[in-house]
Image 1 (cartoon, rainbow, N blue to C red):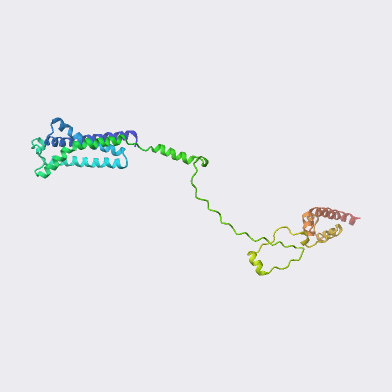
Image 2: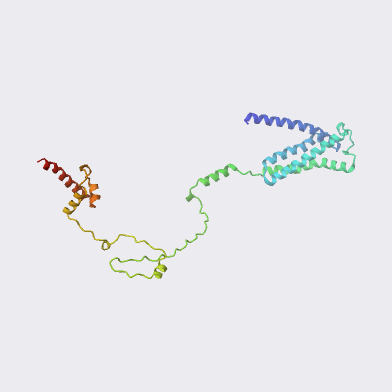
Length: 282
């Protein structure tokens, strides 16, 4: 709702409350006259009752917690009292013309005494409860929600070093892992006596694979081929190869040699194949 709509709604509310007060004012004035009030007191009496109702209603919008509940109780009590007096005014026709007996609001004496006590105690209650409500409103310190939200946001945006040291839970020591048995070093040169099966099972529960570089002494010796032997193997392996397929990589894989030797063999084989057609032509 825009500002104009709100203003119009508040104005309509003020008009309705003013008309309702005028209706209640007539009844409360007649009741005040019947209880012995003079013209000025009877004229002000409705403001004492209905006016405190308006004050209590405003206090409920300002106060909080227990003070707000107290204002609601005052509002309910004076609303009920105004309703009873308006009801009595409607039941006793003599009150309308001001011809009722002084101090007579009901035919039954106990009811009349209670109504007179109610009508005469409302001004005193207005002084007490009105003063208490005003004091509560003046001493009320509303919680500044805006500052609280800013403080919360500032605390959230602060970095971890800026925040105070928080009490952390005591550090739980990490469980100590059992030391693994030292790996068995096997000397591949010297013969190793076999270990008993039970002792190995007790010392090393899990079989460990051999890691690391195999010593040269443990490797199988490979015969070293001479250049002529290597060339003969390359001739045999590539005898049925076309000249286009004579590559260093193919020769290297065929005779299992190094890349440098494979390139040398490639050049030699290509040179031999290049000379064969010339010899045939002669």
